[in-house]
Length: 297
Image (tube, rainbow, N blue to C red; front, top):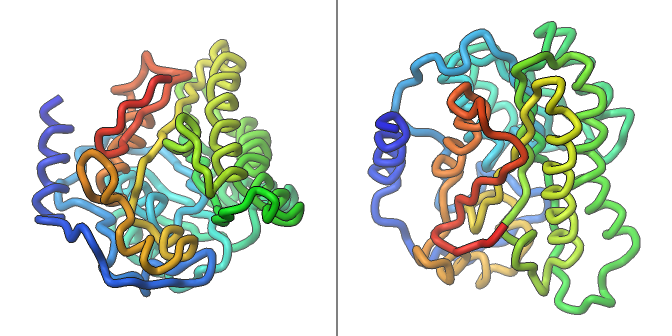
C-alpha cells in the first residue's frame, strides 16, 4: 500500500497546480502528443522495484496518452514492451526511445481495425520476445456527433472495428502464447457507465468492453489467466484535442469533481496493479480513475 501512496504523491507533485482551462487547440484524428499544449504527463520519477521483472507486455495504442504512460511504467518495473500503433510515427518513436532507457521495446505500425494486422502484431511480438505475459487492449478512436442521425455507417463500423473488434482479435491470437498467471487488461471508459450524448457509438463500444471483460474473465478462469478493465474518466490525451472543438478541449475535465482532467501518469498505476501479482485474486473487475465521479458497476 505504501508503494501506491508514494507513486500517487509523486504524480501529483510533478503535475503541480493544473491549469483548469488550456489554450484552445485542435488536431486531426488520431492526434499527436508531441503537438499538444501542455504536454501530457506520461511518467513519474518514482523508481521501479521489479514488479514485472522477466514479463513481456503487449500494449495496443501504446504510442501516446494512456498507452505511453502504461508502457513506461511497465518498463520501469522490468517488463519488455511491445507497442502497437496506427500511424503516429513521431509519438511512437518517442515512446520507444523512453522505454528503451529501461528495457527492450518493439513498435509495430498498422491498422488494428483489420484482423490480419492484429494477427501480425501478435506474431511479431512473439517472434521478438517469445511469449506474452500481459496484454493491454487499449487502442481506441472516437468521433463526436451532436445529432444521432449524423453517425454514418462508415463511422460506426470504424469505431466498433477499432474499439472492440480489435480486442477480440488481438486476444484470440495472443492467448496461445499466454500461460498461467498471465493478465489481460482492457481499457473501457466512464462513458460505458453513464453514456455520452455526443459519443454514442464510442460509448457503446466501451459498454461492450465491460461485458467482454466480465465474460472473458469467466471463460479463462480455469486457465488461471486474469481479465480486468480500467475505466478512465477525462484524461488529457491526443484523442481529446483531435475529437473536440478547441473551446471544448480547452475546458476538458473541468466538470469532473476534481475540476480538472487527469494525466496519463495518474491512470497507469491502475494497469500496473492489475498486471502485477498484487492483483492475483482479482479478475472480472474494473478500476475507475475518473477524478471522483461515483460510478455503480
